[in-house]
Length: 325
Image (cartoon, rainbow, N blue to C red):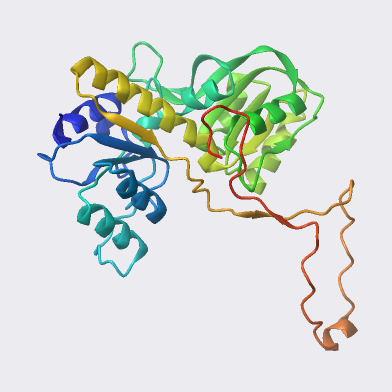
């Protein structure tokens, strides 16, 4: 069986740490280099629930996309939630390795996995890596649809193909717009609007779109026949497909070396949002008028009971094979 250092060597060949952004924190966080590795768990977030899952399944190595200590620390004491993760892993001989922005821009990378989940044909990176003579590495991907579909149909496709979360899928644009080309970027993508416009795509699917950048992109799109429309998914959901892609890559390497590694992908929904509440009415309610000054002197009403329209949606199965349920 391989040692941890053997496995880390191949992971760093897939996602070289030198290709990570300067602000990033990637690589081995904890682990004994000479320890034997038989089982590996892939996940998006290095949270306590995932650390406990790694222990429960007998993993010797946990590989996550997001760093545990992105901004550094002065302590790993177990009285903090991050320190508790470190203690859980070390006490149970589980190493932790992080592949973040070096996995974002890899070939294949996070956005290739996202495009694959949506059955899109990748034509190239959205932001090419100038150090790649083949022109395949870079941030985000520009894609073509297998056949033209409307924005509404594409949003429905994303809702079915990606792991379901409480926030669901948000859309900005004409639902009947016909799409032929789409840019995708797993994780936060509203810093890429200039590149998306330059690519001339019909729509952009990403995560964490904020009000002002999204509003300005939509207003600017009115001067470009409404393009690009925006499709906003949960951050975790857009990056989870990478875990399956990464596990498959390590499986192939393990087979080639005769390592007989067992790889697993965590299906725990670690997106932080757990509840989505909305009105039951078909049309959104009109904004209510501000209360009159006299109203401020009235006694505060007692809290109302939750509306039946409010609902909790955590881990709901999708129709995509292998997606978390």
